[in-house]
Length: 153
Image 1 (tube, helix red, strand yellow):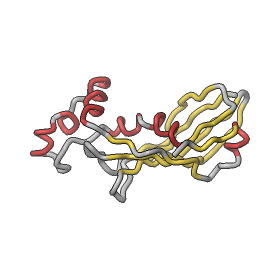
Image 2: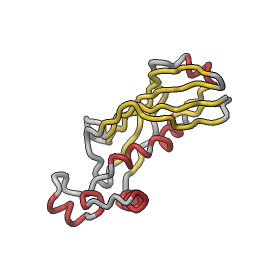
Image 3: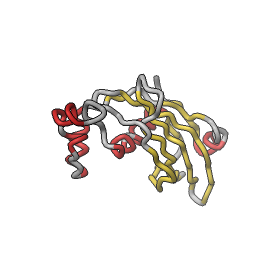
Image 4: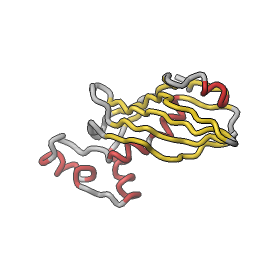
């Protein structure tokens, strides 16, 4: 499904408290997990050793790093919505992040974005969204995070 088109800060203001969109399903492969481990230096066996994880992990397989799931926020939000009429968006921070459910290798995740708050400022706005990462076929989300971005017009 194509992303939702939002027309500038005016369009965003009208959506406070509402769902902005949801991404496509995204498969988390062992290769992606390994690449993330290589990039961050986090090679814990629960992520990178499929044989040991099959034997010793309560999940029966490797699982994605929580921060790998969170790092998908940018890619998945671009699938969910596009804001037209702006110059750029910069990450500003996070208010709250939780990882209530693991993402097993081979699982598919998608992200649902909800606009919590918009504070206009000189040159643009500061936007807080709730990002919920669902795991296909599971009832508990893998990650729930409040992200803050600055939008410049």
